[in-house]
Amino acid sequence: MSSLVLTGDTSGSVTVTVPAVAGSNTATIGAATGTHYPFTAGTAVASTSGTSIDFTSIPSWVKRITVLLNEVSTSGTSNIIIQVGSGSVETTGYTSTTQITVTTATNVTSTTSGFNIIQIQAAANTMSGIATLATLGSNVWAQNGVVKAGTTAISFSAGAKTTSGVIDRVRITTVNGTDTFDAGSINILYE
Amino acid sequence: MTTPTRIIVDLATGQSTEVELEGAELEAYNASLDAQRAAQQAAEAEAAALAAAQETPAVEGQ
View 1 (spheres, each protein chain N blue to C red):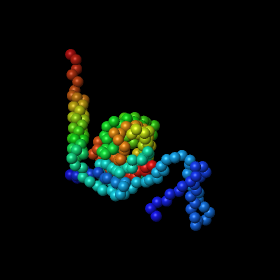
View 2: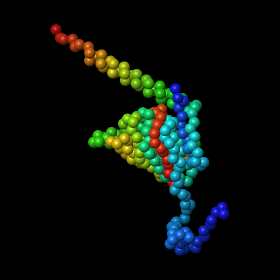
View 3: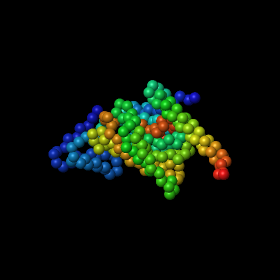
View 4: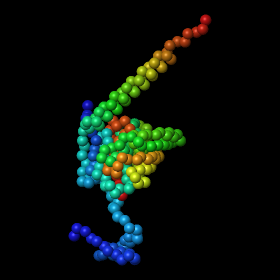
């Protein structure tokens, strides 16, 4: 069976029941008309080499992308940024600001080459956290995130970017583009 | 010297590959490295000049 079509009346609801289990599970679909896309996890990749990690073939229907960092480390102290693009990665036109708090001290920096999601304090730092990108429509994307560096610092980030077309790729890299990933893993979720 | 690479994860296939930088990307990589070296040399030269100035004895007025 290649597909299953459920047809309901113009009122009421369509119920999908999972059989052969103790009890039953009911999923109710709201009355709104539209296309329901799945909430999808990408393929986690070890961030142990390379100067950047690209997730490509992002479907055109995607409205929100979540970037997940798990104890990621790089060879230097250049900040980690997220870049997006349509056909190719766009490296300009971001309005991105990141604040880092280290114990009681804070520092704020702005970046135009990507969404700056973490200010790295030392090459030995391992970074974990989440950055989310969501579209307002018309290829306008907003971003926010919280990522920790080591055990004493945490960065809060926010920004925006208007892309030249529909996003089909996300790149995680560093501001200088030469520091190399050397630990951890990265994945994305999209919906 | 290790050739710089990047990792590509194709969500359509689930495959990840590591490819060497080439073309414009490799040029940008090398330009960034050159800029970092130049900045480091400038910082070292400034620090050396500052240290030399601090070691120079002050000339007392007559």
